[in-house]
Image 1 (cartoon, one colour):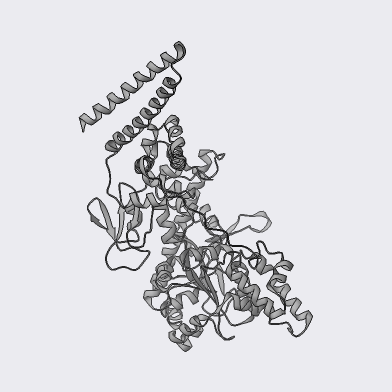
Image 2: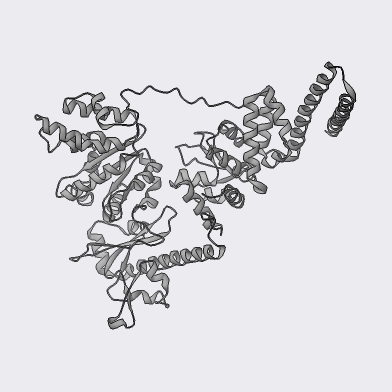
Length: 597
């Protein structure tokens, strides 16, 4: 788990204007920067970035957050991925393992950087080679690709020969070349000196980028007869096939514009579809679709359409994709499956029939529920008891993987109709968690509204200026707890969260921390994010005055209690006059502050 203090330090070092400015054109407007919101369509800018608060906020759609939140929403990164991205760009090492010595952590960082630099240089080399490789250019032109689309995806060419990368890497024996998968080391015969040669030779090269745009691997395709047709980079510290999707970096904005992502099986499908007007396409990397792939896609859009080849291999791939989707699908997501004629893949189909015909296929794609029921029943005779039982058996694991939802209930009902049973019988037989057909809808979680009055005033001040949390002490919180339990509890949670961030406590870091805790402060965060910057010294005086007033009320209550019992004994009298001295001092401080205003 990444320490919260590190995240606060990271946010303090990051300039959110630079982070957002990589993706959104910003213009200075007073103390803030303005631009068109990347999260909804608008003609007049309502998207603001505050360099002082290190926070973004859209007055149109309500999107808001820190630099971490922006990368998550815009690039589809996970929380940890966004932190790692910002840390790497700011020369910081994420302390994921507190037991790892600093020297070892620095060595790992240096190794990762060396691998990344090697991949970038290799990509540049392959792109230069394509410019003079007439055969490769004719091949790409024959596939209908323009120079512009080739440049967008960074296509290149690995020429014939065993050690062409020696031209780009004078130190051809550098460990990073083998560790990144660019070259292969082969042991010599009888234990002799090893031989090193290029992994990719005489192939069109497709660079694979991560969500930050960094080259992490390659796919190389033969231009004629040869095996394998596609040769991929091996698994490396930079590249894990089960986590990455080809074309996602290039397709992110197009996915938002189209409202869906199209998942294909091959590199050429992605590039050809982008050429023909479907830039919202991505592909798995020579491996089956995984739940991690689906999770990444659902961060980008609520609608995923899988487009597979029409052959038997495409059908098997579709089944594996269905299995990957089942734990993640819910009522807010739409997942469909597009099956082309047996002899076609998306690339060949769109070149033969055109973009309009392919768009029609996309529109008519089969919903997940229909595909699941069809898949489970297609080889079974539903007129027999055995056929209906086998259909239920085929559907069992998929339904058990689903979360309770209205969609699961609809699929259960569809399966019950097919197999002449009832939804209740299927749910009981499959032992589905929280059967939807019987579950009572729980009342929604009541989100506490920020308290009014003095507690709200103090919460707003500390939220806007977290360092002021140091002024709070337990006696003040205890006093508020007696008169306003909810408000005192929110204030206590806020003070603890602010104090846990240490010296780097800022509005952005505190907001990020509170949201990670699933707290009740979002309404106030949005309110403060939309306001102009306030002076911390004025707020220090305001908070100090509020604290003194609470203490004055405490002292008066204690004096009244002593007076009511008649100041019995010398101890009561001493306590009474001690409280009076404290009260006089607090009143004096209040008078001085009023005079200074």
